[in-house]
Length: 125
Image 1 (spheres, rainbow, N blue to C red):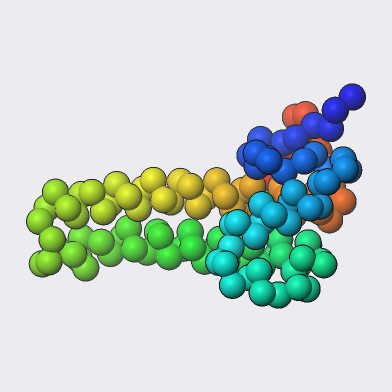
Image 2: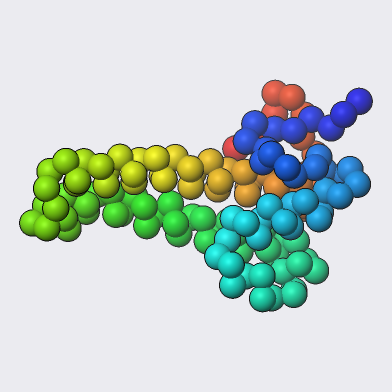
């Protein structure tokens, strides 16, 4: 029976316990963080450390996007026309959804790297 993958499991990451799981998880996680994270071999050797750093990075990005959204009108109204401010707000909303989804995916990958197994109906947080 194939491994159950929880909602939000990232495309391209093999199921936990399968051949290539850690390698595909590391490759995906490295794409979820700034490129300079690739400079640190310790993160490739210890995927849980990479996942932990990715979790913190994405949490900060979500927080930053939310703060940017809250302040966009104040920060930009004097400089941009109203339609441009609206477009910036729409971009923040789209990016916020993407970041939240990425943060959820990092969470389930990190949990799998730590050895957690997933079953249908279990809370994937």
